[in-house]
Structure formats: structure tokens, C-alpha cells
Image (cartoon, rainbow, N blue to C red; front, top):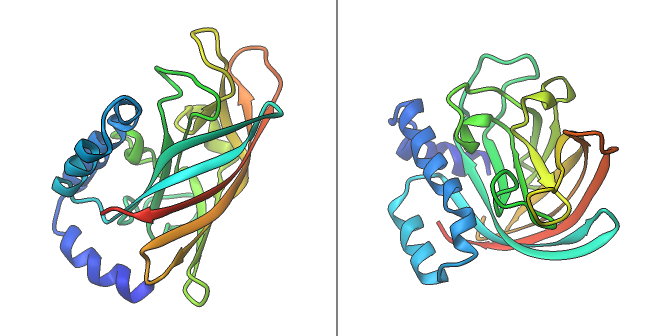
Length: 212
């Protein structure tokens, strides 16, 4: 994985951080649109973008003790910032399904290692990231000190009254398989309600194939 990432970084690192951010932000802005547009048109958009690795995934899990199954994306991009208080990330990862900000739904989630991947220009490192090249497994743990920024959230129910939960604990672990053509793993995180709601847990199995 390390060798492959270095090779692919040469294709992407010649872009400025703003260019990389704009590409990823545009991609994430289409996650909600994916739910109402065709797979063909979505993949056509992806083929024109320059994020490093993109996987279309199925997310099967439980939130608020209710089961759900959703489609989403995992995006892997070059390291965004080396100015951090939780260790320099070997690369950045974002999981997105729907848009929990504008279209709350059961299991909708944004979980990224840097908030540039969800459209912010702040380049804030949001997580501890560990990669084991021997097993091709990346483990991501949210930095609880930065949870209040609200970049990483999920929702448990649909509708305008849904409570967004800011992710502050837990982990996501993903393994790259079949020469990085597939991805599989799990997420088990807890979020704090932005209103007076108690904390809530989000657990799911993630699996998918590379589309970019």
C-alpha cells in the first residue's frame, strides 16, 4: 500500500492544496445527488475528478437500535496538512453517505480525517490515523478534542427535526483488498447530539469496490 500510495501521490501532489480540496469537496457535494441520479452519471463525474482512490460502498448497520442499509463512498486522498496535534496522517480518508446536514436520514454520515475532505478550507486534522502496510489495514479514531467543529456527524432518523450527532469516539477500520480494487471493514463510533439528545452509537459493516 505504501509503495502504491507514493506512486499515485506523484500524480496528485503536483496540485495545490486548494485544487485538491476543491476536487474532493465537489465530489462530496454530489453524495446526496447520487441517491436520485443514475449510477452511470455518477461514475462519469468521478472519472473526470482526480481524487486518489474512490470506492463505492454498501453500509449495513444500526443506529438508534434500528437497522439500515445505504450506499456511500470512501475517498482516499493525499495528506492534507502536516500541522497537527494528533500526528501527521499517512493519507486522508473520508466516508460519506447522503448529507446529514441538509438531508438527514437513518444512517447518513460524514466521517473524514481532515475537514478539507468535507468542504472546509481550514485543513483541520480531525483524527488519529494508523496504517499497517503488512495487512493493508487503516484504523481511524476521531480526535475528541475537535469533535465540536461539527465536521464529522451522522443522523439516526429522517426529517428536519432529526438530531445531528457529532462524532467524538470510536473507530473506523478498513482493509484494502485485491490489489486495492476492493475495500472492507467496519465503523463503530459514538456521537453527541447537538441539541439536548443523549449520545448515540453508529455501527456498520462497510464493503465495496474501487470506481476511481
